[in-house]
Image 1 (cartoon, rainbow, N blue to C red):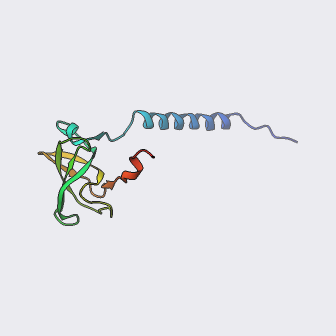
Image 2 (cartoon, rainbow, N blue to C red):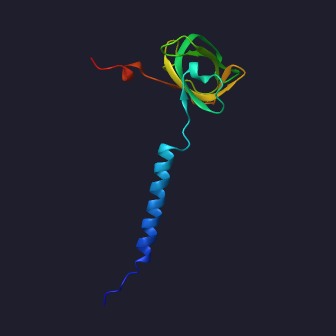
Image 3 (spheres, helix red, strand yellow):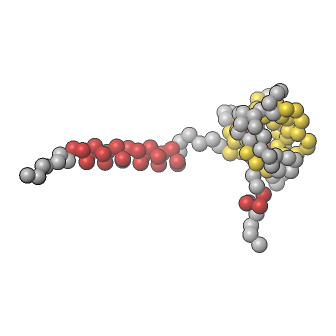
Length: 129
């Protein structure tokens, strides 16, 4: 004798799937992203941002002590901002390298969130020849 299944299980499962799909769509389009800015667009911005730029000058200090200090400049510009960073430093970090770091601007200095420094590989962002 075959047992009839209740359609309530299917309705509940589909409802949960629909709610999850709407949540994923909302977070990918409108929610919770950290804005990415260049140094020239940073002034006056409140809150946490991802700062993109090129390392200029000679980095100084210790990333595990008082902090690694360096300047980030617009990749194709002249505006730069001083950065203080603590945490692990990627092997490819050096003067002239494009990097991204999260943090906040305080009193004209970008205070980076620890362990958010990422270097960009220039060859990945150049057109193929």
